[in-house]
Length: 461
Ligand SMILES: C[S@@+](CC[C@H](N)C(=O)[O-])C[C@H]1O[C@@H](n2cnc3c(N)ncnc32)[C@H](O)[C@@H]1O
Image 1 (cartoon, rainbow, N blue to C red):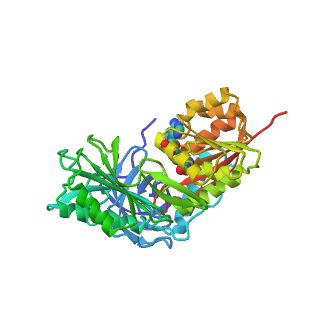
Image 2: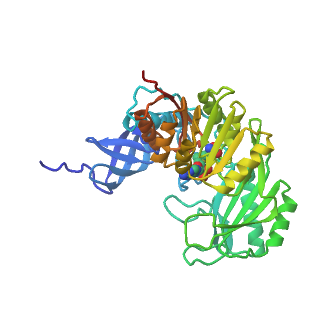
Image 3: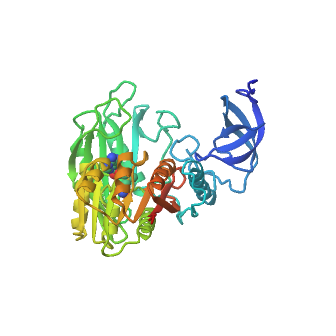
């Protein structure tokens, strides 16, 4: 059979009309059926595009000029949007962002889960989809002898040197990054240089409680010692009374991983506090805590609604982090068991239960895929199981144990629709029918999407 020729050439410029959007947010145009993916292109738009890569079955293009703009195109408010790798969707209306995320979920439900029939509801979005992030981790560099902070330019480790704000961050985080940068510069603390593996300050991490405005600052250095530590602490805490915790973390490795293994509280508490709904949470530096608190409440309320608990129900919250979902569930259930692999998160979870006077919870440190079969062997038979795994989804041994425990319902919270669809398929074969899926926009302006799905056990006679 004759090989089909690629209809475009690298560096060629073409006028094209976009027909679709990928789940990354790229426009899709077709040249004689050959798809060309173009960042920042929107469906219905006519644009001048330069071909930058022409693979056998698909290519990539660069948007040179929009000839006819979509009514969904908006001006990106961030002045470094087109350089930064953090956001991908600022050029489209929020309405289209929500629709795109729902379509992504519908697509995986069709293509991976083979569940065309399952309703995927419209994405639950934010009224104000800006300034929502409670945590920033920003690289530190040097320019003309001064310390700079900024995210990396897209697909590189070059720091954006004219970034003065991040519009999806809590303003307190922005201010604190700037304060640490300025004070560290004044004190002559050097920035880490990745190419030479020299210098001191690698990253600044700031976490702020949305409701409390309590702030934790984590200073990540290559060196054991943080130079001018006392002066830095004094300058920060005298000027910013909302700073409740300063932590020094040491990362000596040549690595992209931000936090090193060794941490020391150098001022204040090990925790900051925040509230979601009427529950208070203590959050330590290394624990997972959802980054968008208002939408976390929306997500958890949906999970709780899907769990449909009665006061006699026993529940497992797998991958429970610092016990956020568990404590919500515990208000309506007889007993909740939480399982999580990070020991610090389980200490936080126990502390959080105490803080809120919640006694019907039990938290265990371990890998969910090992603890679930053990719980099953011990005779634990929960009425409802909630899972909220990391992006890679659930381990098969975990899914198997969950099916064998025969809960009447499973509620699956996921930050990766593809692995969600894969796992729903496995659970379906194990007798759990997916009833509906609700996308929730936890990460506006970015192409990430969160979902919650409810599954019911089919009882065969
Ligand atoms: C998406 S977070 C969810 C946390 C929590 N449910 C929440 O909403 O804050 C996933 C959690 O799973 C934990 N985790 C990752 N792999 C695990 C495993 N094999 N067993 C148990 N927990 C795991 C992570 O440490 C993280 O806290």
